Length: 224
Image (cartoon, rainbow, N blue to C red; front, side):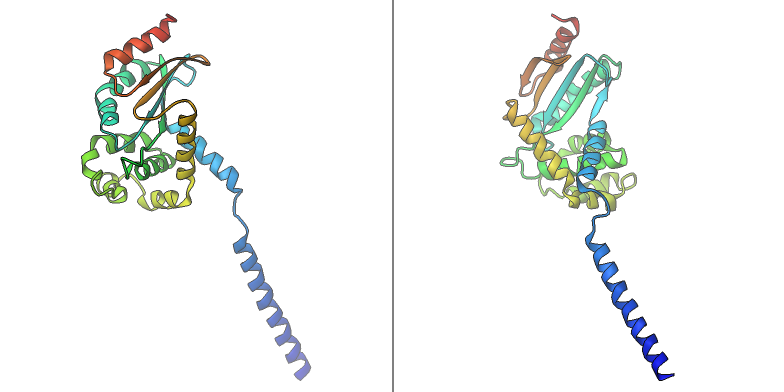
């Protein structure tokens, strides 16, 4: 009986040790391939950061900064008309890219992180609109979490938002947007790139009113 008891105790000890090693090892193993997860994140965000016809021959790429007052003016007073008259009607595709000017707008990067993360909940355009329309409400203290919780807490899962921001995926995407922007000559915001097929048709630096942007898009559409 004593030998049997010792064997049972020995086996029990082994099981406890094995279980501990198993769970410790499992905790060290990634649940998903991090590269694949990041690529999935980028695809989801980019699919949300666009308005219009994905097959359009004319594409307008907008580089902007959520804390930039001229970007706000463009977004509210001018791009809204472009969206209504050209994107929604299927004539063009508009793509949004992040280019936070952190040296003069300290909260722009964090705003972009939350905006991009909201794409995972299908709310990117909503959050983009809130950040621009209520820019004065958050650009002094920069508490984007509290701002969104107050303005969109009933439609956004803020726990998921925070988890996404902490993952670092949105930061990586914004950094890549900035790097790409610098490569093609972006130094300030807003800045628009208008493509006709695969060719760059026109660039527009700084704020431009609706009639100017409309004229450029009409030119690209007509091929003039």
